[in-house]
Length: 211
Picture (cartoon, rainbow, N blue to C red):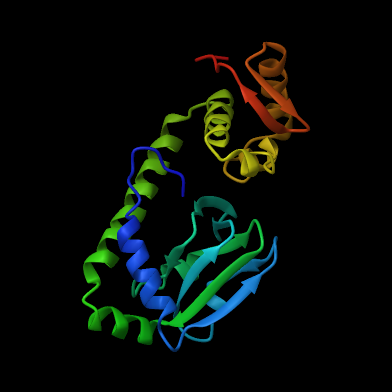
């Protein structure tokens, strides 16, 4: 998850990743680009470790994107079943992952006194969700939405950025028409504020405060 101003708890994530990977009960699996992974389909409550690849978390209620995971990242590390009932994951690239039954996971956490690391990761997720909610609250019109999305895309690594359609990025997050996106992008391109090619963002020079 690329989030400005919020520090990713790297050491805590690394510790939990090692505990999962070193557990004898952990099973590896892989999924192809475009695969949809519904965690509620797992036969037992489990922890999922995303080791490689780009994975996005979507809300079931409206199929809106909530956040991206920056691997490695452990998902489902609390006793709450909310993540399985309310969300699903989409593979935006081929992924390599592992799955571990929660019973074995929590026994491992207790044995290694790693509860503080769990707390730090959960706190990080809360901060990410709060920041996302705050950003969404501040966008009040179509231009603000598109401006925010363009700014977020531009912060991504070039390889990832070049694979993202601005339309897909905006529509996956907000209720907005394609024609509205086209109108704003056309104006920004013609005004020399941005440069796009086939809806791929190539350059950002300056985004005006108002449209």
